[in-house]
Image (tube, rainbow over all chains, first blue to last red; front, top):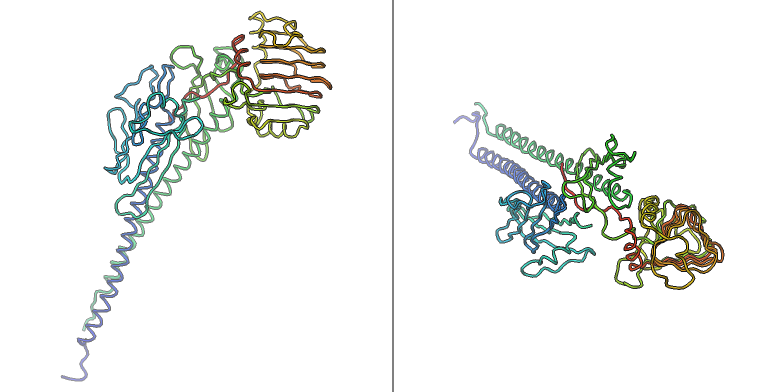
Length: 191
Length: 335
């Protein structure tokens, strides 16, 4: 073998391969990190959007609860429990509440199923998944919280409710941080 | 020998993937920022709408129904201004009669407000407060000038008969409540009890309508004020000025279309209405369990003592239905 031959030795090949692997590993880790960031950012954005959507939907329904243009005596809150609330609104002004229409809107916290649902008429719509805590609160005219018995507030006590609150905590899978919202809405049908 | 390798393709591939990831993150961020901007605009418009609703409803004149509101500024139904309400800048409000029976009186008012690049539409139902009158001891058509009180004024918003009832405000007038409180605090000789609520905004009392209703109800004249204490509640209306020189008592509703001039002493239980204003001269004493509704001229050189009395106001309301404030009965977001 001539001493003047040029080429790649085994050692050089091994070193080169090792260096290449190191660089590739670093690149892969960087790309994977970026991908995780993207997934995490997307999940976080979705969680915040979901929480905000819940706030907007709940506010929308609570604000119009008791809408009664015909003066028929519509009661704004027909079910008031810690895990469930139902609103009434005479949206078409005919003096009656159609239970199969959007004139009734209910919210159900099912923490066991990690879900908050909005029930419009007879149609249940999942509003948020990944729910780890969810509860409704009721306040009287002075802003004092009304204690909620196991069966919920009775009709007479429901008539004293002037504001409703929703406390919601979401922890979607893949996220460490929680999305929390507390919304307090005054019932506009209470002068 | 040709030097081949994987470093360059790998680097290029990694660069492409990283670029795609970066673009995705940037797009995600852009979408979230856009959503947040829209939410902020919607929230700003909603706040503007709610503020507009509060201001317009507060500015609606206390009364018995909404006929005047529906007739518009010219007071004639069937004209272009029917139902058009004065609203703050950036907001419009239109009223109409809601469906259903005429009683109790109600108003359907549509609001549209723009703020922060957003726009919101809200429908509201407005009715009359079940409680009579405006919950204020002194209800003025306009804020008097500084220095109107040189005597002594005591205001007590607590109800002696019903200590648990809501406290009444010291003062109501069609001005910013903070300005009313500042005016009251700036007047020497004014003592406000701790159980008196802050001043409140309210449109001027409906003096003309009250006068017409009192006349229609067959109100007596100044003879309803007597020297004996605790007279029976009655309706009294006096055209022009009324000067009280001696010591008199009255109860029910007293309306003076001119100035009520207290030179002596007047103790009254109920509602005293003085279209031309109230003057308590030096040495004079004017004590009311109930409320005083006065025109813009208020001058106190003597003693003026006002105390909330729910029973006195209820009795007056029984004799002559008193005007009610406009209150919000319902609201719904339309768009």
